[in-house]
Length: 175
Image (cartoon, rainbow, N blue to C red; front, side, top):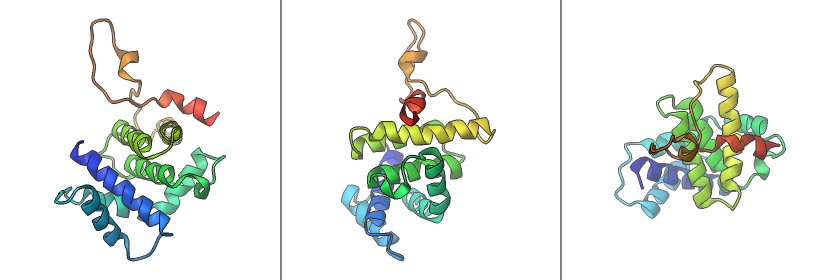
């Protein structure tokens, strides 16, 4: 597991716990530290976990409005806790971390959803974040990137190693 993936895992678990505990004020540092010790004692992420968690919390209202926009059939509070916080994390990274490629933010969110969520969590998270990505591209807020899985991009004899991000499923998920 890469350091950044581990940091995202700790961030997601911390957001989950914060949300589960009904968003207690002044407890987030304690929650982050608990999860850091639980998942990776002695792990130095250079402040990435704290940045992610505090960033999601600081922009929660705007992020939740985006979730409502791109998952209109799902009130935010009705979305499973894991899925809701994975989506928040993915949206935060795409919107507020220009140094993190959209492809990475999308792939990481999908992987977290598959690991910690239910059977359809990966597709649901992909649908919401993928729809937001497509909207940002259409508005010129982000450059389009190729998100097709490698087996669809390979030409005969060519091997390409890129993480999977099946954004094509967005229309199926939101239909």
